[in-house]
Length: 96
Image (cartoon, rainbow, N blue to C red):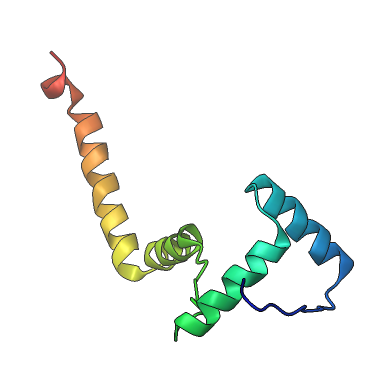
């Protein structure tokens, strides 16, 4: 049998309860998860993985607004509107 030791941790009660509930959902317990963390901690040099949570919609929307406010976009929109007016004026040609 392997030699073991006891580890006492002081963590916020809410954190412990949330972790216990989540561990139970995965059919495990905090004891196993702490052991798993320690094993991974000593095995891996890059234990921490940084993830970015970027809202691409906000970036896209910001770019679209900046583009639509530009002089080039206003010129393009004006040209499109002129072509549409021309098509409407000559709609008889396009109707079957």
